Length: 561
Image (cartoon, helix red, strand yellow):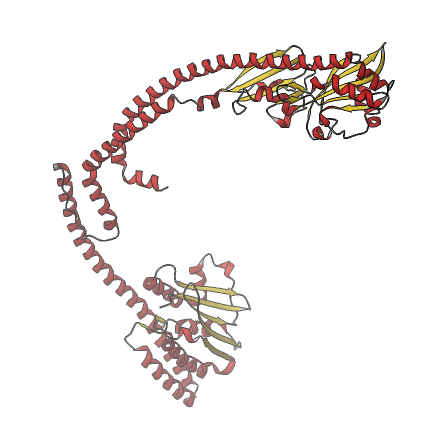
């Protein structure tokens, strides 16, 4: 957001700078792209060639592993000690010694991979090489579904993918179980089992291939994943879509002795990121662009700086400050622009000063005119009320009314246009006494004013016309009721409410606020609303809320000052 604002304020500089720099950047980027493309192709081709040699090595190692497994099975097949032990024809102790002697060379499959050879006979005997401890009884194994599956398969040598081996050392490790049925005269007398943990099986390719670059799947002829660099997919079905990956090259080779297929997915995008040839070129190009950009920035900024000095002065003019003249150095064009700007400020300052004086006089005249509409109206109504008492020969009430009227006029003729609220309420109290003389006790009035409101400044004679209209319009035909005056301070400002319990009127019949005011009070309240807005602005003013047979509330909102 800040960058956008800066670019907007420095559009001229930005365009010139961009135009100058784009050419250099384009040339540098084009050079880098060409170098990058050629280097990438050469690097990937070289890596693929080396990778092919590694895959051949992996294929050879797996063939040797299979040969070693078959060699161990052949040793077991040809061993009389194994046959005797699993058939139980000789002394068991002597047989075990012979068994260990004959199988001592079968402890390792390939490099450091243990054979984990297990012999189980149909006679209930078992033999675990490498001092392994079985994790289930022979009887459980012979009765298991896995053994039934072996027996149902006619092949002598078989393999299976299992979640765990038969010993405690392999009980939590998935892997491949190689099985050789042990037969004598077509009769089954036992099983030779070699459990190759998947971690050992995959170590052959993991020690040659970087699994951050290569994704490996070893899949059998039934489409089951037997080994993978993605461990979560072990034992799952192979989906050809797995090798249809963008930016990957796929190498596929058979593991003939196993009837397995080895899939190698090379992540070329990751491989390219590991290239070191492109980085120096990119760094040199970046430094060249950076240095030239800094030099261009300094030159262009120096040329355009006087223009931006002028632009920085403009916001002050929009706020009414016409004294902020500029002294611009630079080219002939910018100097002429500065002189024209200073002359414009002088003319604007003179014009605005004249306009302000005119508007101030006009505002005072309008406020005085509105007040003059209120005061004669109030005097006329008051004298009419006293005259009415004299006609009724109520001399005592008339005298009391005249005394109150005199006190009221003493406040009214105060030359101050803005008075404290307590003085305005004093005027209201005198007027309420006057109205009580005329209307008697049928209309009761009460004033509730918070102490914090007493010194708030309000326009003089702002409340009396509202109370007068309540007496005249809210209680016709000897209606009784109450008039209450409340004042309080809120977040919005000073709020004064005049509430009567009179007959009210239907607001729905008035189309807008001004019609509601006119319906209730005539020109008096409309003038009060206009007077408040002229003094304090449109957010302040007078509102009227009324309901038929419930009463009317006149609400004044004034600033808290």
